[in-house]
Image (tube, rainbow, N blue to C red; front, side, top):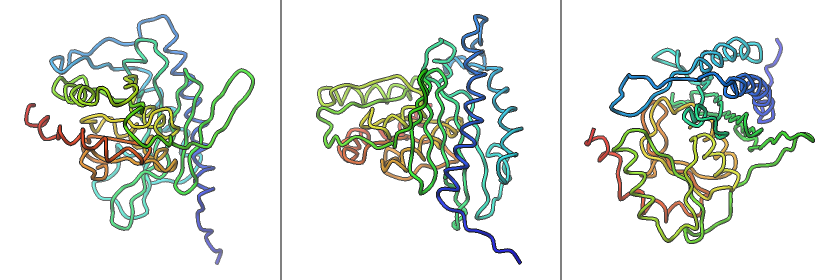
Amino acid sequence: MEETREETPQDLRNLALKVAGLLEEAGQHALHDQLNPRNLAQPSTENADRGPRYKLEVDNKIMRFMSARIADIAHFDGFWTTRPAESRPGQRYWYIGKIDGVTNYVRRMSEWTVTAALFEFGPDNEPKPIIGIVHAPALGLTYLAARGAGAVRIHKTAVGEKRDKVVPSMTSSLDGSVLSYGMSFIPSESQRALDVASSLAGRPADIKRVGPVSLDLCKVADGTYDAYFEPMLHVWDIAGIAAGTVVVWEAQGTLSRWDGERIHWRHDNDVVASNGLIIRELQHYLQQYPWLDSINQR
């Protein structure tokens, strides 16, 4: 009887690199559509009182392409969005994200991504992302990470490809730090983000607002930002959060909900990521605006 070789972190890294190649190919198609002069999308009238929502045909193209190709690379148990109600320990599901940063994409900005995350159910039957890939086609950047194998940033330029190990900043105080925050199109949720940013005024050297969540998380992981926060990221954001989370974890950064609890992969979350050195200071400000207040206002 042939022995089954145990999976190593390098095996997961190799799998991540293969899937990253597919994601880059899908990203090139999405970039072509973005640069096409035709109108990309129209705001949907669905839930119009809660802000504009876009439906993109390119999302369907990405899903079809990735679903058809990823099964050729390695065995897995299905896709996150169609998984059964009950899953067993050890089962794995890929979550292929739609365009993360859809407003940036439609407005022909460069800060948008395509993402993929591999979830594994642990002995406690709880899912956890173990591979994360974030590809920003218009920036020529790919971040990828696999459990136990660290995180890497791949930058493609006209003169070749550059790979760097991803490590967070060493900034040890909010004073002089650079933060990033995200903001919902839902008024009560965006107000919480603005309230936190306002309360921080005078401490960070700068507070950025660019997005999307997956790219903001990776920029915490590589030291571009010292921390990132966003209230009420929704279940439709899970793909981007999960992919960026693995990059943060493997870079030795921290990520949690605003109250310090772990991210819940089936529900909405207030998310904060940091280099691990300023999280306690930052949480002092975040915890002044608990997420239940937002729920009660809706």
